[in-house]
Image (cartoon, rainbow, N blue to C red):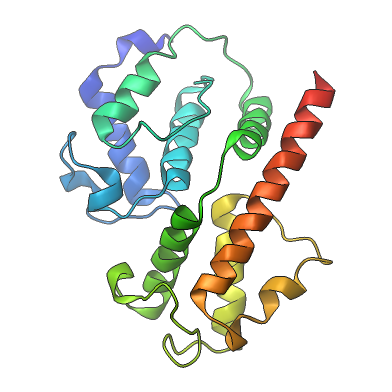
Length: 209
């Protein structure tokens, strides 16, 4: 079945459904989004949220969009344009495609501190019953956000899930003491860790070619 049979309205509707129901995104009011609405401003999307949306579309239609930069994608219309320009790419099995997509996404993404902070605030807001704009960049996890040890573990786990990583045991100590520090410090550590992992993945992919 060729992707050319799908209309713009259908692709955008599918994108809305992904935004609404995806495990890592999960925005209940996504079906009310205008195609021209900024995902970053309206939904506090980060580049990784947009990447997650694109990967979900790839998996839905079993195509390889061959994207590496989400910086110019900000609306549902942009998502459609990025999707439609990938028509005609050779299809692969879902299992192989998922592996390649995740490797390529991690290898080519450049993680910024701003994106990591925004992602962390979104996760904290959902678990602590807050809004992202209520969380200060340097909020302390205990005194400002009322975190306990269970909240700390859940936060780290959700950050791992969002970025599709597993923090190595030898590095875990850098993140496990969040109850004694603030959001800015932890996000800085996450950003450095993510970019180090991305460089490692990129090197591994180059060796496989």
